Image (cartoon, rainbow, N blue to C red; front, side, top):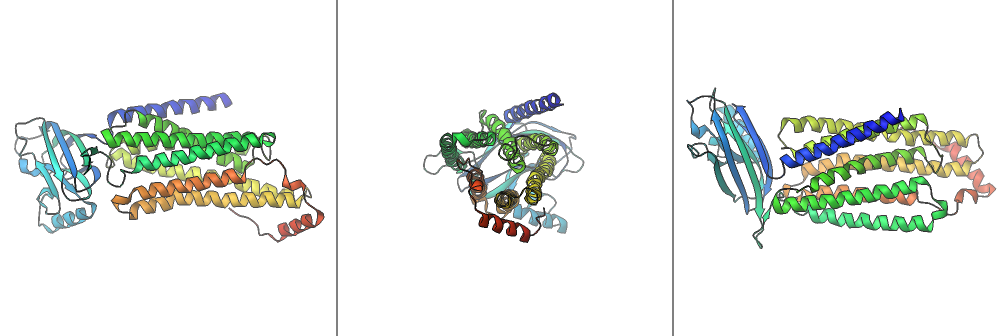
Length: 440
């Protein structure tokens, strides 16, 4: 059984890495889109935050039509803001226009009337209005389907150096942000190594596992910083995205496993895992692998692709299940400590342990809520120029969570539970009696 489970985890790990390699080789910030037999009036391709020195380069090739009778001016590309799209739909519903290309709310790039005999055709367009735009392909000919290959490149020019910046406005600062947090976690790893060395006589296996989690988090941030840095300069990750997804996969599994192991009290309260604890790990680890595979697809495909929407639903469902699953071991430990307090006569010891686990339970809930809900809300309400703020908020919450976990579960040379007098023991017993029942 154990051998089979290990094989399954290894197999899923290989699939995740293969998925990362495949997608990283096909798309990046420079998009390649194949439109096949489309009769839709508007197909979203990509979005980007432009500054007032933004540019869009479009290359179209392999153009074909299902009929020879059609109007070329009704086929083309345009840019549109999210707010303007509602106005365009209103114009079409009222009958003021019949095609999005005719709306005054869009920025027309070109129609296929300009292409005519040229195939492939390329155009460089200067976006002079700073805003977040979505790129659309439009075909307003009835009963005519169009197929075309599209290569889109969006970037902003640095006003000083005139270099291209392929990261959307609001994300351009992300490489520096990720590198700063890498340095923070590298410092935390150094401090933790010092703590382990100075308290080496009172170490448990969980303390070494905590060091592994911090190191993987630091490496994940370093790879993400390099990934974003290469995309910023070249429009492609040059393989750094593969390393980022590998370390993200390892970080996700080890972090959720650490929360489960701490919740069960493994190594510092008991030297083994119960069957129900193992079952939680057997649920969390495969789900984390699926979650990371979904994240690869979401990050590396167009935000408007059909598979992106599907994998977002998968990612959300799996992430919710994982977040709920890791809470159960903590609740089980709290109940076990409550029951032990009634029988073993060590009220003070159990009260201190119980208080620590209840605090950890609350912190885990706060961490999950903030990184899954509050950060998402921040992404929605924040202007496109300040999209980096949600990343900073999420990483600061992670730093606080790692610091809290390390401080409260650090190795201790002297066990304070053994230095208690009778009065403290009696006071602790009364506190346990008066304490309300803890519920999930």
